[in-house]
Image (cartoon, rainbow, N blue to C red; front, side, top):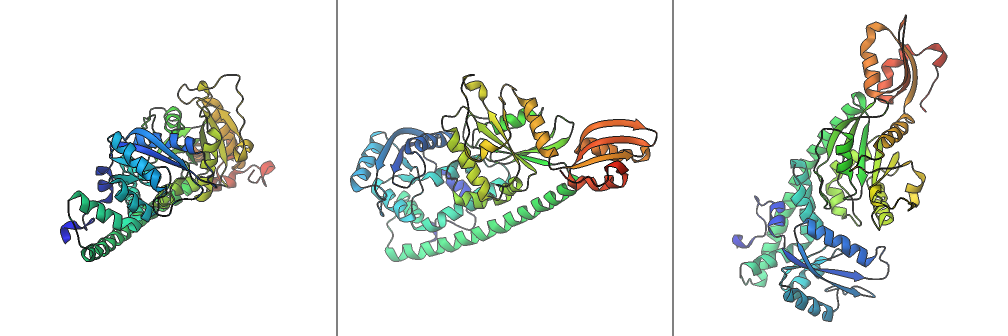
Amino acid sequence: MAEHSTYTGDDKPLDGLLSNAPKRAILVGVDMPGMDWQMLESLDELEQLATTAGIQCMDRLTQNLERAHPATLLGSGKVKELAELANFHNCDAVIFDLELTPGQHRNLERELEMQVLDRTALILIIFGQRARTREGRLQVELAQVEYDLPRIARLWGHLSRQRGGTQQRGEGEQQIEVDRRLLRRQKERLIEDLDQVRAQRQLHRERRQHTGPPVIALVGYTNAGKSTLLNRLASGTHSMVENKLFATLDPTTRRVRLAGGQEVLLTDTVGFVQRLPTILVAAFRATLEEVAEADLLIHVVDASHPHVHHQIAAVEQVLEEIGAGGLPIVVALNKIDRLPSDMPLLLGGLAATLPKVQISAAQGTGIDALLRCVSEALTSQFVALDVLIPYEHGELVAQFHQFGTIESEEYEEGGTHLRGYMPCNHSGPFMAFQLPASRGIVQV
């Protein structure tokens, strides 16, 4: 019986996920009352996701429904039509643009006699392909185990059909329980490993809060141009840039100097999409906490995208989910070189109330203005200082240059006279040298 197990103690869910990725697929969209997205727009994005995963999209099938069919989502006639369409195009999979229930998943694979993926499974495949670091792979594996647990019966049956085995009901049920226990143990180990990663990240964050420069996180819809902007701002860096969704998965951090000479840490994070699966948000908690604990966010927006407003709303929703909704935000309206010069860009919702800069990260347009805007946004959170630093404390002057924003610097008989702003976590050593006329200045 052991040879029919879907999982063993040495199995790696991520490896299995990638090895089972299909080559040719039919995309399936469903329009039902209450959906808060446009079906055709979402199908366009699903095709981009599939292409990113290396899957060739051969055709599409759509259906308007009053309610989902509990067994197969689609009606029986539509399922038959889907099977014929997939066979005509010689496909090895169909991909649904929403999350299927475990029962629907199982029934559809039985009816269609081929692999069935939903939106969540497709994103998991992409994340598995893009994960490079140990942390990234752990997070994807945890999400895959979470996804597989309620679907273990389908997985075991699918593997048995691949091997040509015909199992009796009793044996199959016993093996499913074995596999379910193995998956749960795998989940426990992954959570333990990720908790260690999370603890290490927390130590780094605490150390950085006391001794490091401010942290700015680049956030935005996937393929909005975050990595291109990181490369532009941090000269000499070469983060991966591709015209694909989720080109960057593992976060990248670089040092950048702002317009006033202040040093900051700039972090490029995973891109968001509409309906980012909950299991991915949960699995990537350790990474997404970097966003939630940043000092400032730069929301990179693809201003040329036809559905830019929907993308902005999707990002704002995810930021709320991870506890970053209240952070200071600067909006970088990217790819303006692709917009007609006379075309106004009117934003709604939260983005309409935030500081905005129009840029082209690829061409370098508007970068200086963005740096000034970021510097002003950070300065508004800093402590205003007017200090006279004795010459024997030159290390404090160096710290002011490294972490603060300097408005004026003069060399006087008693030391170096500095006016400017400093992050709260670095202001303590300077308070002893505040000039009397500026004592009582508080955070602005």
